[in-house]
Each structure stands twice: as C-alpha cells, then as structure tokens.
Length: 331
Ligand SMILES: NC(=O)c1ccc[n+]([C@@H]2O[C@H](COP(=O)([O-])OP(=O)(O)OC[C@H]3O[C@@H](n4cnc5c(N)ncnc54)[C@H](OP(=O)(O)O)[C@@H]3O)[C@@H](O)[C@H]2O)c1
Image (tube, rainbow, N blue to C red; front, side, top):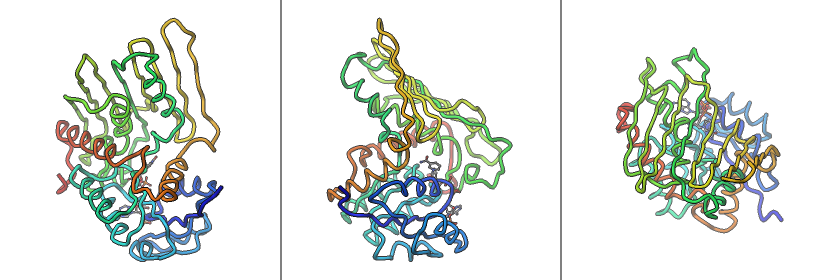
C-alpha cells in the first residue's frame, strides 16, 4: 500500500532527467511535480512532457517550493556539490546523479552537510538496486563459488566524431571516461571485492584534455586482482566477469533495464538469468529506494549507503591522480 505520494522536483532537465522522469511516472507513489532549469522554455517543455505542475526558471525557487518532497539532481557532475548544498540548505532530501562529486573532499563535505542537517542524501547509482546485481551478490555471499579471485569490467561506446562542446568532452564540467562511465566497473570491484591496496592506471586523452579511455589494474591481498577498461572510442558494451575459485559470474546489460547474469559453476550446466521486465529494473528502483527510506525516516540507503559513495570517490581520486586526469582548479 502507498504510504505517501512524493512530489519530485527535477533540478536540471537534461538527457538523464528525461529518462528518470519517464520511469518515475510508472511509480504509484511518485509524481513529477516541479522542474527547475536555467532556461524557462526547456523547463516548460519538460513540464509538458511529464505533467509537472510547477515550472521554475532557476534552481533556487525549485528547492524553496514547500510542496517539493525530494529533489533529483541531474546537472553535470562538476555542479552536483553546489546543487546538493542548495537542496540541503533548504532541508530538501536529495537523490543526486553520479558521479556524486568531482573529488573525495567535495563528496565528504556533501555527506557531512547531509548528516549534520539530518536530511536524506543518496547517490543515484543504479547498479546495486538491479536484480542481476542483487543475485550476483547473493551467490557470492552464499559461498557456492568460493572466493572471488579476479574481476574484469568494461564500459565502452563509440559515438565519434565528438562535438567538443559536449558535457562529456568538457574538463571543467568533469567530462571524460572515468567519471562518466569508468566509475561503473570501479563500483563493481568495490561491491564484490572491496577496496584494493594498489592501483595502476593509464589514460588516453582527447584534444579537449578529457580522458577518452582509461585502463586500470587493481591488486588485492591474497592473490586477488582486477582490471577494468572504459572508453568513449571503443564500442565494447557493458560487462563484468567475476572469476571465483569454483566458477564464474558474467553480468551484462544493454541499458538500465535489460540485464542478464550467467552463472557457471564448475561441473554444472551454465545458467542464464535474464531480466527484461521494465517494472523490475531501471532507474525507478533507485527512486523507489529513496522514497522507501523517506517513508521509514532513514537518512541514507542500505543499498547505496554514504560509505559506498565515499569509497567510490576515494578510489576514483586515486585512479585520476595515477593517470594524470585533471579538472581545472578542482583537485
Ligand atoms: N545514471 C545514469 O545512467 C546516467 C546516465 C547519463 C548521465 N548521468 C549523469 O547525469 C548528469 C547529467 O548528465 P546528462 O547526460 O543528462 O547531461 P545533459 O543532457 O547535458 O544535461 C545536464 C543539464 O544540467 C544543466 N546544467 C546546469 N549548469 C550547466 C552547465 N554549466 N553546463 C551544462 N549543463 C548545465 C542543464 O539544465 P538546464 O540548463 O536546463 O538547467 C542541462 O540540461 C551527469 O552527472 C551524468 O554523469 C547518469
């Protein structure tokens, strides 16, 4: 039974905000209530598309609207901290897109502010909410495949030639492969293996200075290791293989909704699990989790807790420093 219908405020109606709002519309306890944009026509177009009642031509008025229950921040990562502080200063619960911030110090300040103000705060990182990830975690924790020995993860696409004015290509907005897509396989290592004790990283750079590809090797105690690759110029798709003592898990997805998990246990037939039902996957799961936390007066999610966001940005900082990736004036 629905406890409360939440009025969502959408801050920055770009590409991902449109996908998020489309999925939000499928939830009985959510309503796309308000939108704030720097551009009033964009806000109006978005409001029309999703039936939002309130339209703001700036973010300040959006977060000040007393009818807004929770804000979804969908601006470029370099602006997440500024926009999160704006929400938290108005006591608004926040679901903030990944990468949560540009660096560790920034994310630490965001989390500290949320805790001090007693306001719900969560990174919009969709993978741990997905059924394929929950099943992979369950299998690993059950011990049937033994210990994880090696993880290989990748995330790549190729939409070149790129327009250098894109967010993705702009170092000042935190553009580049590592914060945009590399963080997904990095998250997988942290999720299934924990923090590494050594990292070696190498990036290739586009002419704007952003990393267009990155390859990373991670070492762990007890002869365990991992490697990942992320790129804007290699159409690799998205996958993570988890090699264990007695078998292998293969996670694949073509978008936030379509996903599969292959389970191959030594001596047994391979099992392929597929999730294609849009009701059971996608960005809506993180929205549902945020509203469940609000229903229960929780300040953070158990599925995507602050500690996981902090661990992720700490690891990303080390990778960036090793690979020489710089966001002007932000290190
Ligand atoms: N979870 C996922 O699967 C996923 C997928 C893609 C992206 N993302 C994340 O979502 C965030 C937004 O990505 P996007 O692809 O939606 O970007 P986008 O299409 O470029 O939209 C970003 C929005 O931010 C606002 N903005 C505010 N200040 C800006 C500035 N100085 N320059 C550019 N835009 C500015 C703009 O909205 P107004 O001008 O209308 O205010 C713009 O529409 C990123 O952090 C990205 O990592 C997540």
